[in-house]
Image (cartoon, rainbow, N blue to C red; front, side, top):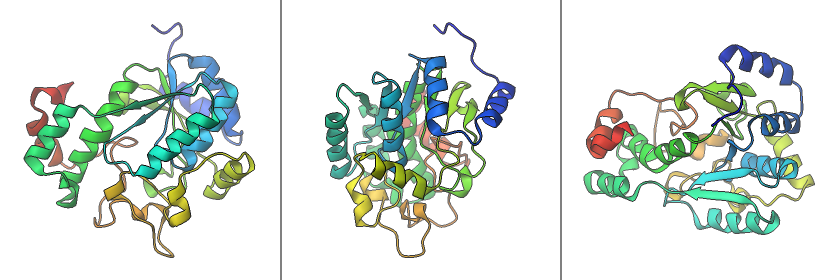
Length: 262
């Protein structure tokens, strides 16, 4: 049970203005002091995520870090997780997994690689393997910390450092790196010798599930390697922005049945 009142949109907006121009550590220090222990760092172990882990661990070595193991992650991601556990002794890292019953229903109905069939099918896969497990974690928190930046993709250009996440129970969402560029993140990682995902050294610039991620070609946007076979579709899975197509929601309900309302 929280011993404080959560923020409303007005307060979050005022804080975002106050924190604009401040270093990410300033936002993290305030957030951890304000919301601990009902706060956690969400990461998919991309370059922004490991930078946030390093910053947060320096402030509070007991900070909760969580990630979704979708069951389709590349081996290199698991290797990085082992490196991070070695680098940060006692790191409170929780890997959450999708409901195996939901996954089996989805695979039985649509196939293992349904994500290649249509955008709607891809969104179903993302929802079952990523969005729903993450949502269950967020249900137990008052605030969560991400590595989102404004320059990552068009859907992220207006993110603020402090937001109210109305898609997840109106908890507080913190984006300490919102103002930073990719180069600033890499500078931090190199200067602090933070372990990072080895696929970056192979031309990857955005890393998710193994079958849905590739290295980019020269001149392509950083997220062009995600779901590259899709056209005119959002380069999002539904975690950081609500996606409604009118199609996949009906299919998802058919797959999950009564569990779709959980």
